[in-house]
Length: 488
Image 1 (spheres, rainbow, N blue to C red):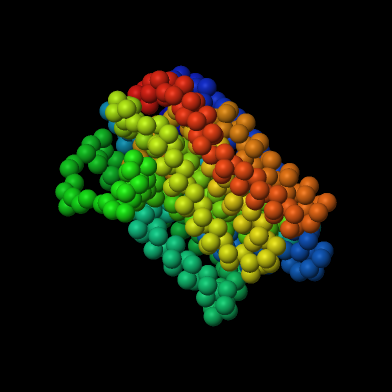
Image 2 (cartoon, rainbow, N blue to C red):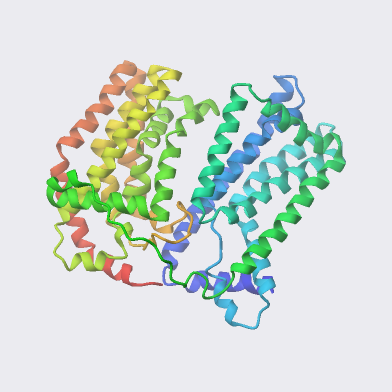
């Protein structure tokens, strides 16, 4: 039965009305997956021999010491990105197929996601290298099985957290508090991690604990989903006290202020947009990667990180304009909405958040003022140039977004298109190249000034660029309307 379900999944992919977009996205995802596979395999080999050869320590002990951090990161990534495949299974409820089979298939399908097995690739490679270096086969095997069971348990925890953002936020705060206690050596968190995870190697019978936890969570998750697995689930009316939200001072800015007001309400009320805000906040810490890999310490890559640190909201929200308005976009087009004011409202909202991100990113000055001034210059470039190119790429984004869906926040295929990829040249490659070249020949001060000047020029030319963007929005108007009306 599971094989029949998989065949139907393949048929639905090739028979869908959006085959072109799906195929392009699958190809891009395959390239991304292949890149991470190479990085994880290489990282496993390099880390093992570095710990053994340079640090002269036991690689399994050191890996076990930091596995608690890897487990938490894995859980966070799965919560943000891994989708729960319920909706495409529900139509089978009308057929004579046992509900138990459907629920088990849905649970098993989560393990096919790249987010489930990519992390295992690192530990499998690490274990193979350990075997070639004389470690006990049985001990390495039980160590790998124990780690895998704990990582795969995150799939089930993710299902419990799905749609329960308050619970997820509370757990996230608890993780942050425990992490802070470990960082300041109030509790020996890494020592506990080492004792637990290395115990799978040192005392192989300990592996029965994560296996039992995995089986228990599968059973609990199965019961939970089966109880909720009905066609009419969620159709019952929910009573709620109605309330009106309005940011009064924005009204004095006319049509632009009204649009900004509506967007702020949307960001506060809907599941997908709340995820965008959470993702934007997480992008602020993207710059910490420079301490995980030497590659990120080059001038071009520091600029690359600066663009993401200060422009997380811009990239996650801006390139989905007008997709976020897809539910009422046809109605809006009948009201003679001034396109330029609509674009300006999005532009101001994006840049306000970018400005706030620049201020919050001030903590990078702790790692050196050269890092922060680079991020500051990247923020100015995001405000002056990237904000407009991001909105420009939105004109070609024709995929609907259901604001109240439980689809994961960053998994929407409509976020990318060929025009958006071409616009990455002025958005990412240009500032990286200019910054690296100018810094090489003239130093950090000239490099920062050069990027700031590019941002300032873009800011001065914004009205001309708005006219070009509006022209493209009008040109794509009817094809966008048709795409938003097409539910397939």
